[in-house]
Length: 112
Length: 117
Image 1 (tube, rainbow over the protein chains, first blue to last red):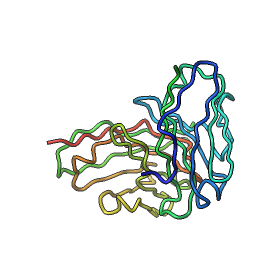
Image 2: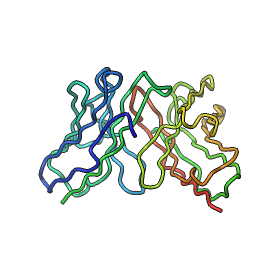
Image 3: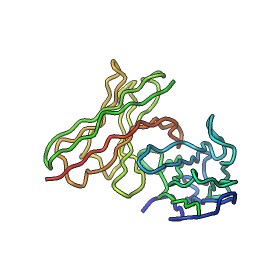
Image 4: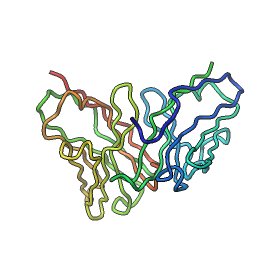
């Protein structure tokens, strides 16, 4: 069981907006502005989509945005496209583990 | 351009040893942590451990400490993940990645390790 809790699946139609939540505690998500999000297509390596809660690396479309409220972070994808169908993982810095970093369990996004 | 290039897929038998590699380029290898992430078939991502190549300081997930060894050769900018005795449950995709404060900005392409008798 992951320290960070994500819904197992979400779905949406092309053009719609969806949000994926990532719930932790004050020792990780709530305590630091170091939440990141990854997109993983089948058979591919994860790709960083959001870092430091709401920052996008160069090349990531602005349809992807991140936010945080208390112990819950969210990834919002607006204007859903077929190629957004993938697994999404959140990650957070945390100080209560040896490695200082932990992933959520992952969310499967289906574009209907 | 930062790149992490991993060694190729491996097929091994239980009890055999294995060392896979991750060659870094495009940045100062000795000034960033680098780590290994496991993804078991159909499952999520899990950090296994980290190494700081500048001084070889290593940190391991408590669930994996003692079963794997992470090392680095800074002369060739390469990190390694090693097993002395593989189990069938080690079958997984393994990624190297460069972590910084809760995020990993660069990833290798992955190395598939299959262990079966």
